[in-house]
Image 1 (cartoon, helix red, strand yellow):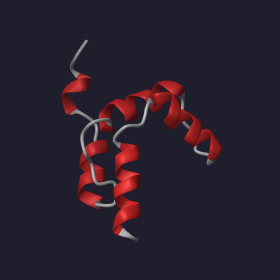
Image 2 (image 1 turned 90 degrees about the vertical axis):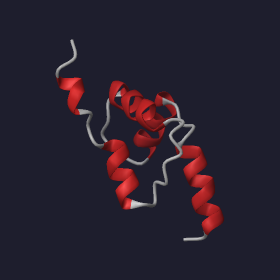
Image 3 (image 1 turned 180 degrees about the vertical axis):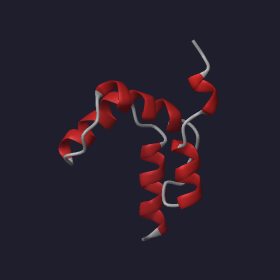
Image 4 (image 1 turned 60 degrees about the vertical axis):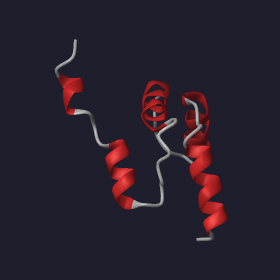
Length: 71
């Protein structure tokens, strides 16, 4: 993919809000709850993740092991 397009997509991903992500999910037929969309957006927002890099993408979306122990 063109590096300029990748940069544009990565910039957009790193600025997405939960409501925007939820709208994109509905638009493309992805089943997600608004709370899930917000959680995903919080996890990636502002992290400068390269969504086209498998390792970075997996690391960004991997669940936080400490979240299971927090009240």
